[in-house]
Amino acid sequence: METKETTRSINLTERVYQELRESILSGKYAEGAALTELGIAKALDVSRTPVREALHQLEQEELVELRPNRGAIVKGITIDDIRDIYEIRSLIEGLAAARVAEQAAPEELDQLEETLDLTQFYLERENYEKLESMDGRFHQQLYEMCRSRMLRRILKDLHNYVGRSRGASLKTEGRAQESIKEHRRVLEAMRAHDPELAKEYMTQHVLNTRTNLQRIYQGQQEK
Amino acid sequence: METKETTRSINLTERVYQELRESILSGKYAEGAALTELGIAKALDVSRTPVREALHQLEQEELVELRPNRGAIVKGITIDDIRDIYEIRSLIEGLAAARVAEQAAPEELDQLEETLDLTQFYLERENYEKLESMDGRFHQQLYEMCRSRMLRRILKDLHNYVGRSRGASLKTEGRAQESIKEHRRVLEAMRAHDPELAKEYMTQHVLNTRTNLQRIYQGQQEK
DNA sequence: CAAAGAAAATGTGGATACAGTAAAGGAATT
DNA sequence: AATTCCTTTACTGTATCCACATTTTCTTTG
Image 1 (tube, each protein chain N blue to C red):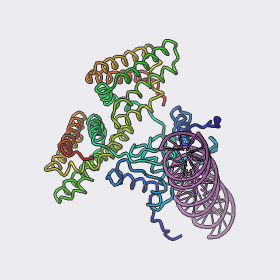
Image 2: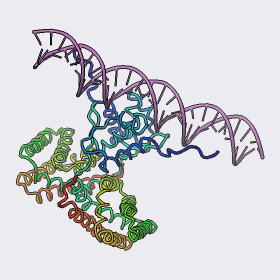
Image 3: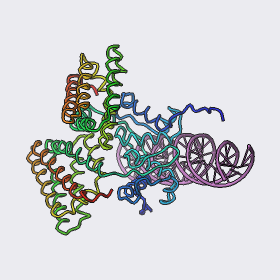
């Protein structure tokens, strides 16, 4: 009846997946690096099975390329990918915001508000890691609330890729404060159940972030 | 050294995946049906390994729900999903068309033209199966040509879901001919390297298909 | 010395074995 | 009769094993 040794709360495949994904997105595994199932399995001290499944998942996200009988190579993501992601999001994330404005319950909107308050809190304490995570949470919560399986799928998928960029964007002078303001505007429009306005504000927010990122990546031509 | 028995040209996981997917999308496995790895493995006469991997892929597409230690249940797709898919496509497929208009090589556009000619051919012979497949090919080819990994990913993904609907749409009086015409307009705009026009025509095409589908699903409230 | 080809090394695809977990059903207890 | 607990059963999660494909290395031969 006592607490069992449940150190590994979640399954191994998921853990391996998260770890690999993180390593790729953070650049720890460089573009083009070759990965072998056995190599990773040994490094993480698990059997080949979970590694295999994790690699297959990563292949579906196009973060690695699986060559039959020849192992996997890392694909990573490029600046062009990021540019495209923001362009696509600018087109459809407004739609998600509009859906939320139409259908969300007040308690759901309260949740969003809490997230914004927390964001403000971490900004004031200059805790950039938390700040970034909260900024992301706002969007993720929104995706969960939009009541469209397809929108949720796509937006979550895209969102997953841009973690690092979002962090970079929020660190530029004044952008975080501005971003919070933009989020709040969106939330207000949702509270007023005004889909059109929510859409417009959200679209503008994504575009602003994109513009800000462009400024950052300009000149610095690193991957 | 002689030719070996290479009947299984492609790998098993892929085969199982295709088969399951088809069964779900065609409604052979009803919504909510319970699937077990072993059950499917026996039915298809393979081991659990490929079945398992196939199920995981289907889970990522949200076509099944995987409950830890309890098996999978079929989720299928709903009319609402389809409606959303067309709405999303109406927003971003135009972008893909614009990219192609900007960047495609003449030989690529020739390929598209061939597909359109074939579509016309099958329409005249009232071979609806081929017709549907060609109509899909036009879009798929376009996705391959748009030179954006993210756009390609999303659009292919969405496209995969709507096979049946597209078939239904093309069978309505006159719609196939109209659809070909709309495709041709898009292609002409691409040949003229006019991104704006290509985008507009493509967007209109998707919207028209959606409208047509709405007419079909109206009244008939089947899944 | 070069080229061809055998053989070893490395790696995945797929099958199977085994352990652990969640639901279900029945016996025991109240 | 209802509730709790134990056993059974039906699964999945993970490890391991074998077969085959591919690449590399080494050897042999002209």
